[in-house]
Amino acid sequence: MLLGLGAALPLAACAKNAATKALPSDDWTRIRADFELEPDVINLDNGWTCTPPRAVYDAFVEHTRAINRLPARRLATMGAELLEPKVHPQLAHLLGVPPVELALVRNTTEAIGTVLLGYPFAPGDELVCTSQDYFHMLDMVAARGRQGVTVRRIDLPIPATSADAIVDAYAKAITPKTKLVLVTHVSNRTGQVMPVARIADVAHKAGAEVVVDAAQSFAILDHRVPDLHADYYCTSLHKWLASPVAAGALWMKAEHATKIPPRFGGFRPPAFPMAAYMEFGTVNFAEFVAAGAAIDYHLHVGAQRKEARVRELVRQLRIGLAKIAGIKFYTVDEPWASCGLLVFELPGKKPGDVQKQLWERHKVLVQAQAPEDVPTIRGVRVSPAIYNTTSETDRAVDAIRAVAQ
Image (cartoon, rainbow, N blue to C red; front, side, top):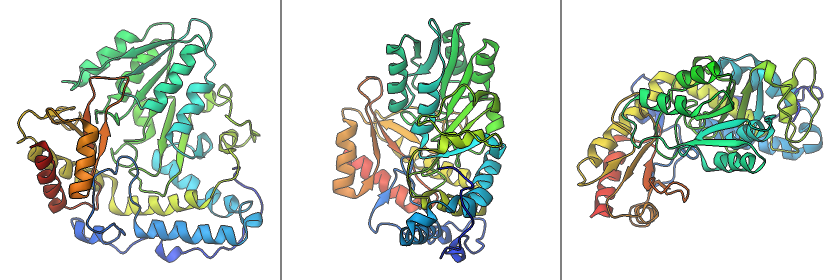
C-alpha cells in the first residue's frame, strides 16, 4: 500500500459529509444525532470498535463504491489523490509526529506485531510485559520466548493504588539485559491507565526501548506521541477515533526503521522508508480515506471535550454500580487511573454469563474479560462513547443490578 502511486483521479467522494455543522459545546443530544445507531440497543462496548459518525460512514461507503467501480485504476491512484496529501499528514499532525515516521496499517495488533516479531533480539536479551497486556500481544511475546528471548512478565496489582506502584513494578523487572518493554497505555483487561512516560524514562536509563499499545488511549485520552517518551507507538483508528474497521497506525523513531523488518518485505523509498510497512497486499483504501473524515469529526467535537464527556459517563456508571453489594472495581476511582474503560466484577457471577444475560434480557452490549492466563481477572467491561446518553447509562446500571440479583 505504497503512497504516491499514479496520478490523481477524481472520485465521486462525498465531501459534503466530511464535516458536520457546528454544535453547541454541551449539546450531546445534537451530537448523538450525528450517529446511525441500532434502535433499542445500549452499546457500551465502544472500547472494541466504536460506531462511526454518519459522515464518516457515508465517506467510507461512497469511496468503497468508487473503488469497486474501477478497482484496477483506483486502487493504484487513491494514495496519491487522498491518502498522501490529506489523511496521512492529518493523522501525523494529530499524533504530533513527522509524517515520514508514520505508517498506516490495519490495526494495533499488526503494528505491534511488526515490532515484537521483528525486533532483533540477541541471545540473553530480555523483553518485559505485564499480564494486563492484550492477549494477541502476549501471544507474540510468548513466540519470542520460544525463540530464546527471556520474557519478564509483571503481575501488576488490581487495582493499582498509585502510579508509583506501577512504575516501581516495571523498574524491578527491567534489567541491563532488557532490550524492549511493552507498555499498554490503557489496559483493555482492567481499564488501568499506565504512566507511560515515567516507565519509558526508566527503560531508557537501562538502555531499553519502549513500544506502546495505544489502542485504548488514542483519540480518547488526550495526548500526543512525544508526551509518552516512547520509541514505537501503535494504535487502531476504529476504536475511539471512530473510523470504520479496520485501520491503524504505526509510528517509530526514524533511527529504528532500519532494524525492524517489514512483515511482508517492501521497498523503502529514501524519502519515506515507513512506506515499506504499508505493503500488505490489496486492501480497501476507503477504510483509510474515511479516517480523514473521522479525524475531522474528532477535531470538531474537541479532544478534551470528548474525553471529559466519556469520563462523565463512566463516572455515572461507577456511582450507580457501587451500590451493588460486593462489587469489585479493577481501577481506583481517580482520573490518573482510568478513563473510557470501566471493568468490574460481580460477586458469584461469571463474566461471560453477565455479558450474555445483559444482551439477551436487556439489549445492553458489554465485554467479558476472563483471560485463561490471568485467573485474577474475571471482570465485565463497559465503555461508553460520546453518543451514549445519561439515561442509557442509568438503564444499563439498572440492568446490571438485575443481573447481579
